[in-house]
Amino acid sequence: MPFFRPFEPISSTEVPVGDAWIAQVKWDGVRAVAEVSGDGVQIWNRHGRLRTDRYPEIASALRPFRGCAFDGEVVALTQGRPDFYRVLRRDRAVASHEIEQLVREIPVWYAVFDVVRMGGEWVGDWPLAKRLDWMLEHLSGVEHVLTSEGEVDTEALFAATKQLGLEGIVCKRVDSTYAPGGKDGRWVKVKHERNAIAAVGGVVYRDGAPNALMLGLFDDKARLFHVGNAGAGRLPRRAWRQLVERVLSHETSLQPFARAPKAVRTCRFAHPVVAVKVRFAEWTPKGTMRHPVLLAELDIPATPAACSFAQADP
Image: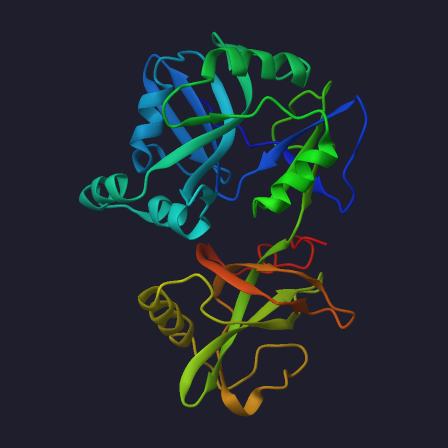
């Protein structure tokens, strides 16, 4: 079964309105595409890495839908809200005994927002509204699967997601087709807070203990700029300690930023190798993040492409 790269939305600060648009909840999880054939179910992340063994309950739920392919987000919930750190624990598990234990400890759901193949035939050329009708008819009520019919009142859903503490919404044109690997204005994501993948360039200390990570983003000339500091955030104490150790395993006496940050006297610099996902309120006039919060360490290298200003939410 071939992997298809997911269709991506563009970012916006304005919610599209009108009869041409519907909105779906933007889930904070692991983007995943799934294919079902006579050989079974295969689940990939957005980078094309197989993740079927990490999510056996989702694979079992999708098995009856032979010949279908889906796009969605794997989510773990804490008090009814997506918990990125917990789903990342599931996604990183490798050993079979660890996967079995985490299946019991951290249940996950596949939040399906599109179907692109039915009965072995590509239906990505159908208008979105028709694809969603099929999805709701066949997937509603399936265990470990969440579906979204699409809300026509886009502004109301945006307000509701803010009240519920969710990340935001994705607005889609009802006539939009699905373009694998594409990214254009037919899908638009609008968030209450902003996300970014940042490189870690050092550790700031307070009273002799690690207090925060120094975050950096690369410009289009591969220069790293300091954009703020983030403490442990939602990470458990042990995970925070391990993250700091990994950062400092790449320690250097040379500061890695294009401009020296203010906390030079109370920090230890590191080569920008470790990548983390952070959430922040907005950009300041000086080009730094206001109130950055650490969500998780990522299992990708902190390359200039992965940790660029361009990939961060505007």
